Length: 224
Image (cartoon, rainbow, N blue to C red):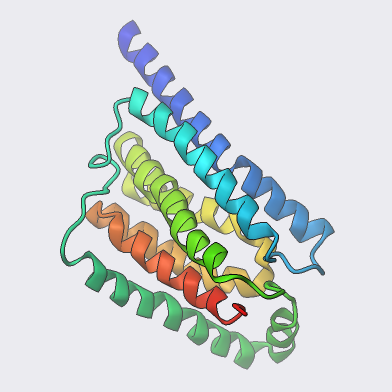
């Protein structure tokens, strides 16, 4: 009984540490930008190198913690299947099409809201190809490893799939509130589709590939 309680306490401590270290600062920064700095673009050329470095450092640190806790790539869902790129393309079509449909519905219900939301700047400046490519690689690996691979796997084993999906979606959306209404409408379908897919299949690579393609497509128009 005591051993079981100690094991649960240790496991919960690991979970809180991973979530706070991985997403504490992004959540704080997102909320700060939303309430105090919303008129300024949130994604700029100078911000990409900082994002890359911070996520590489955190991924290395948290990877060591997970390894000590007995987590393996296979347990996180990072086993590659030949069909993963095809699945990723299908997922990409879904997460790109759904926000457009949602915006059409919003525009029909409240044209003023749709117009004001679209005027809020999210990306500004001219980007170099290398930072865009590295961001499109590093950020998807980081986010999907911890938002789906770790968080959903842990919560599925300790609670239930519905809770796991809900928490993953909530954390992802909170991290991206800095993008405003336009960002939330774009992120929400992706968050839900990704969380449901992983909770059902336990396969991480389709999400990483889809996320990487989505990030690159979103920033490619600003290269130059």
